[in-house]
Image (cartoon, rainbow, N blue to C red; front, side, top):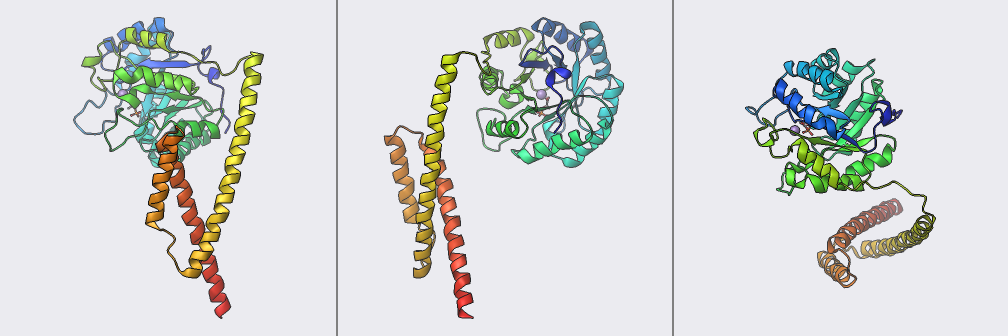
Length: 367
Ligand code: PEP
Ligand code: MN
């Protein structure tokens, strides 16, 4: 994918970027007041929801078109750039007319390829940056698909926003971060800027700091954090918004880590340690290969004796002994179990393959 560098649309951005503003534009005064208070923080983009995708009807569904005019006034007064969520072609049209600088596709739109395509068609031929939030469900391909649709419409000023994944189970945060998904996205598209949205991940202001720090530790390109002058009275997402003053405090506490250093001693030590890890990983793979060879041999003798592939008592024994070994060697039991679940699944798959092949051969021999 041809992705424009971040500073081509967020000029002079000192990495990491900061996007802030209210969940929703509520009044002209609210939009302006928040912007005035955010200005000294040096934010890179001002956000405000104009059309709000609410899960249940009856909640505040956004102020609508009039809010775009407030954002125009805000831009004139402060010089800040504005970004808005768009969920259909009409929203795109109105935002373009109003001179909104950056658009974003929300989590509930990313799940729907028809919606994303409609938005993509509406931005075709326009030089506007588009940010794509992850879909509400943990489906990396859906996220990638949405980014590709926008890219295919000719947009190269692109970014992804990680806002977590919804979960039926009660969890600490509003949405599960599942950091491995944005990490994999970055592996696939190393040039794609990825921002983190701790507000929608946590749903609660007390957890914003830890999630923002985690994003910095994982080398995200920036943060989107909701702010409001009177968060408790906000018409949407009131529990997760913070005042610009508290946002400044939060940002002040964040530790920004470097991507690399010229320190020779550090670089040499790191290289040596990585060489050691490379050897250990190769050893792990070699041992796995040996284990699979034994698994295949067992598959052959089980097939000869017509014995089931799964033997629950053996799996139980593996489960218990490996947990004990994890404890003995001071490793996370959960990690060891998850690894053995995967290995066991693969062993079953391998033995099934061995049995099917042998049986096909038996049939062939019989005819
Ligand atoms: C928002 O940013 O206000 C929003 C609705 O977010 P999401 O699409 O992540 O739920
Ligand atoms: Mn919100």
